[in-house]
Image 1 (tube, rainbow, N blue to C red):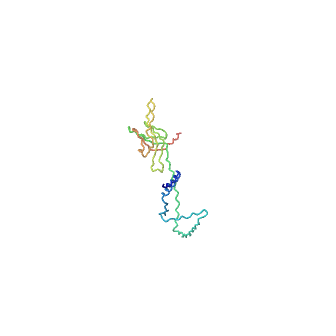
Image 2 (cartoon, rainbow, N blue to C red; image 1 turned 90 degrees about the horizontal axis):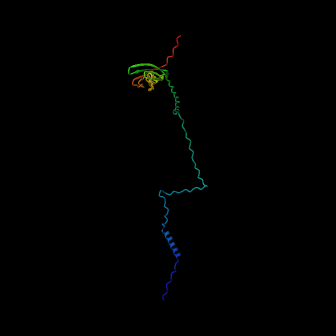
Image 3 (cartoon, rainbow, N blue to C red; image 1 turned 30 degrees about the horizontal axis):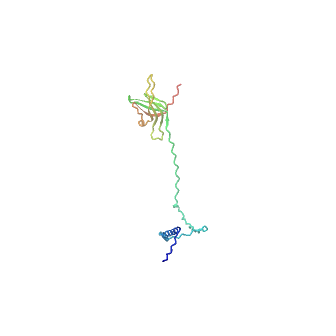
Length: 214
């Protein structure tokens, strides 16, 4: 009879798992690429980094040289510029002369239908009637001496109000004009009315009352 071959010992399950884990770790390590050597920077030669000073070390003092004084040449009289004279004080504008005011306006009215005209006086603040127009002078003055044109100016209002008929109430007035009249330029601000026309002649002071006869 031939001898039997020797029987291999049976490995336990734990041994097989240990062997498989060791083989897996060995394969992972062999799969990693080898470490690359450090490459120098391409921008130029490597710069050496100065060692940092320790907390007890101090930077050496820097000696700054003192500049030498410059010799300034003397200034001649030709180079000296005279100081500008002080600005003259601006003259204050003279206070404008106020216009002289008067208490009587001399007006002239015209009836364009009958060609009848009338020159009359109107005291400031007292209404004056001419046919169906009522004139009220609010102010009357003459130009000041410093004005280029000598003129008379009056602020006048004109109301249209026909005379009331007997036994009937008076009609309410209706304003037809309000503004300044200029004696030198009647057409500058004229009265616009289909029947009547009026303009300023001059401004004057009221005549003082005469002394009573004895």
